[in-house]
Each structure stands twice: as structure tokens, then as C-alpha cells.
Amino acid sequence: MIRIKRTTSENPDFSSLIELLDKDLWNRYPETQQNFIAFNLIKLDANVVVAYDDDDPVGCGCFRVTENERIVEIKRMYVKAEKRGKGIAKAILMELEAWALEEGKIGAELETGINSPEAIALYKKLGYEQIANYGPYVNNKDSICMRKDLSKKSS
Image 1 (tube, rainbow, N blue to C red):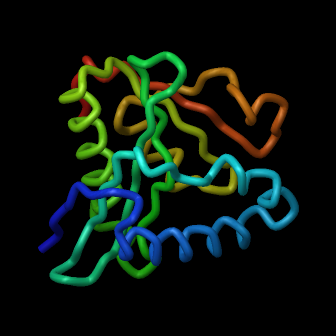
Image 2: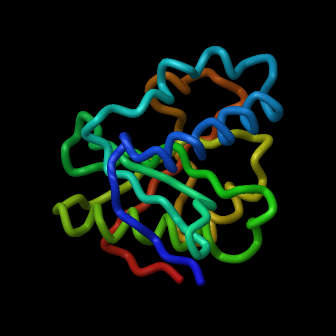
């Protein structure tokens, strides 16, 4: 059974999953990934969740508050390859959204890449809409930025 744990960026399971995520991103975006290392660093104040299958950490995600303090940016979403297709990413994202709502946030935004069709499909299914690329992703042909009004229900 999958359980989702709220934690911090200091969680060692989160750190080990991030290492796997970074390897996956280097495989998907070998020519541009080096441009995003600085933007993928997670500060200590990030809200982090880790998904566990029994005691095995199988997925993660986090959010940080943006300059518009009512909006969060979803970051570092990852599920181990052998655990994909089981609804874990959806559970992680829904937990992050619930946590953001509890903290009075009204929206979420994120960036994903064109070589991550499974992520794009999940975000669309859960009510995220493509927007103009923001911040460090402006003019990046490999990036897709999305936003969601958290007051709307998703399935």
C-alpha cells in the first residue's frame, strides 16, 4: 500500500530519489540539463512529500512559494520507473496541492519538459493548463510551463 509522508528537503529518502530523478533528466535532456542545475536546488524551507510502498521510497515531489506568495511552484516530481502507472505521481501531486491549500495558497505552477509525455498527461488530467514559459524557462524550447487554480476540483 502506498503512503505519502510530508517531510523536509533534509529527508535522506528524498535525497536518494532526487539522485534518480537527476539521472532520468540527464537521459531525457542530455544537451540542456546542465542549464537547470541551479533551478533544481531545493531550499530547506521547501514542502516535501515522499511516497512509500511499504518502507520503500518510490516517489517524491515538493513545492516552494513563488514571488507571488499565494502561488506555489511544484518541483522535483519523480516516481521510480518500475512503480509508474500505479497512481503514485497523482497521489504525490494531490498531497502537494492539499498542503498548499492548507497554507492559504490559491494556485500552483510548474515546469516540465517536452520529453516527459507521461508528466504532461498527468498534469493535464489533473487540471493544469499550459501557460507562457516563466522565469528561467522563457525561450527554452524544451520547457512546458503549466498552472492550476487550486480552488477548482480535480479528479
